[in-house]
Image (cartoon, rainbow, N blue to C red; front, top):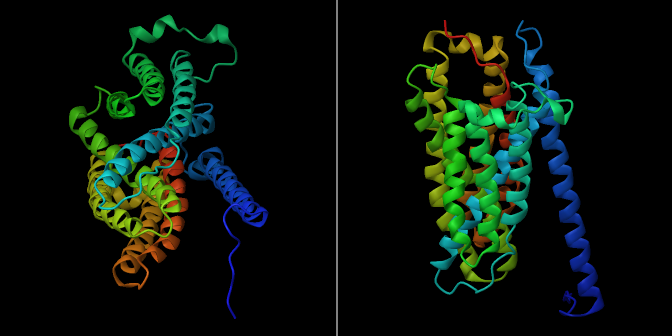
Length: 335
């Protein structure tokens, strides 16, 4: 029996396309909702029984940091994969519609929310009168928060310009600001910690944002040999990014948790529990990536690797949410 697909341009084809778009939109909304539950409900679960106290509004802060990290990943992934696609022989001219402006807007709003918290002495403001905007310039954290707000604003303007590649510079400023914020001057060897965080964020953004953009591009390039070539190019870089995320993550953990206390703090502190959950998620994502790479190499149709890659994107969304939660929890005590 021969299956006849609806011809392009027919009412049935358009209806099928609309149904597919609706399913994808619903799936994205469900994914976003589930990811938002992690920073909202995670603090109480992570802190339970530890005797630690988190700052007021930790859930909201975690959500804002999750949005900020996701907003960083999207334009970085677009720039990276579009550059890869330009070098694929026989690649179609089409590229997915850019989401960089939406990401920059979300990042700007998240950074603005985080700046308002800093302007109120790291407490969630309950009215505009509590926000000391002028005081942001007088503190290190305030200056970094302002830098992130302005960097996302410039990123949005660059996304609208004729040279979207210029987004790279304000995005770099966001990465550097986050790295410096995470390691204040009172910490031991803060520059070393900041350097580790820069590498961690860059590798993570390339991995997460890159995979999302690759899948969007493959949907547009459906039925072409260039799709498999693009996926293969991304897979090689993703392996390096995974190694970078793992190495810097382990080094950062040992800086904050001495080796002889790691096992205890991974279960006895909120930071350790969240870090352990992130490590488990990353290990699961690595297995999905290995499965996709195996299919890419051995399957008759290399594009069957897209199935585990889609599951990998969903798992990476959870990793981003857990990362946002991790930055909002109290740091472990060095014994």
